[in-house]
Amino acid sequence: MLRFFDTYTRTLRDFEPLNGPAVGMYTCGPTVYDYAHIGNLRTYIFEDLLRRVLVFNGYAVKHVMNITDVGHLTSDADSGEDRMEKGSRRTGRSAWEIAAMYTEAFQADLRRLNINEPHVWCRATDHIAEQIDFIREIEARSFTYRTSDGLYFDTSRVDDYGYLARLNTEGLQAGARVEMAEKRHPTDFALWKFSAPEEKRQMEWASPWGTGFPGWHIECSAMAARYLGPYFDIHCGGEDHIMVHHPNEIAQTQARHGTRLANFWMHGYFLQIDSSRMGKSMGNFLRVQTLIDEGYEPLVWRFFCLGAHYRSKLNFNWEALEGARAALNRLRAAVLGWPADAAAAPDAAFVARFTDAVNDDLNLPRALAVTWELVRSDLPSGVRHATMGVFDRILGLDLLTWKPEAVAIPAEVQAVLDARALARKERRWADADALRAKARDLGFEIEDTPQGQKARKVT
Image (cartoon, rainbow, N blue to C red; front, side, top):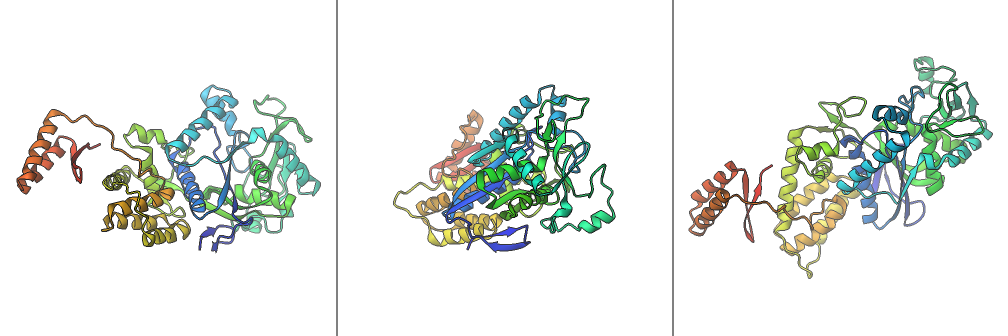
């Protein structure tokens, strides 16, 4: 049975789709005012694994992801400036230009990491009409009030507001220290913000309430309902969305449609560096390009993320990443040594154990353990090759198509290889071991394969 942890109920639940084999899945996308960092991308790897597991189980997934290119302020308390305007000032480009630039960079990172792109990309700025219509419906049901700087959602009108985050709204009210301004309650949030009279924003639109721009939260409620309906199967995001963004999405949808928007709410947990959260505001974030510049393939990062459950913190350091690279290369070398056999079928027992692992709330660490057991097994190589092909539909590591990079072998290393081949032929094992060590000193690792010695450069 396929089961996932639902943040809304705080339980592991059996997954039963709402509409037969069709599954609607919405994942909160990036705010494109800067590059995505590898912590952000850990969440997108988790969501990719979820989608792959759903497809693996025979479901037809419709995956929708938003691009936030307006309305996300620098504070979740509806204060500060729009991040896009801030990014524009930082780069010297228009808000529209940086939205396009960082969207393209984000999509390139997804491709580098073998993350399937969503079936539907939806930009907030392309759906202003849907957001205005959504707000008008909420207003007609008396869930809003107006202040001097915008139209706000009145969270006191929702009986169970904040249930996703288990918020103590009464406690928040009693000890409120947020910037209240004209807000009636600490948890109220902006649906539509007015442009300041003294400024001309790059991104602003006319609305029934005045010229301005939508708040951050309304875009997801409006676009998710537009493409998946007002109640669909799964909504995903990072754990930072549990306290504010996702409770607000739910409240808006309850006000308009009477649903909690999604049947399952699933969240990936933070990446940490030196025991603190990685983030742009922390000034400690690394990009995929940073890893590439340090000599790591992007798929090493994907493999690294597979080693921890998506609902556990993952700590980054370069030593651990180096360990992941070595392990991935061992796995690749093993698979490379298994010739494909068209007559061979995947091993049913291994596939069943792997499936049990991934179907148990995406337990990839256990699935990887099964993968290594397959590597060490005495099954025929053709069967292992076919079985690994099944596993890689989830792992997404391109194991069956990987080929080692062609590396020029220096003459002195080739001489060592030739001498070692002769030593092995003459069964002089101690000499062969000494020559392997000499090659390592020269920067090359020698691997013995069914096809003979292979030398790869140690990076």
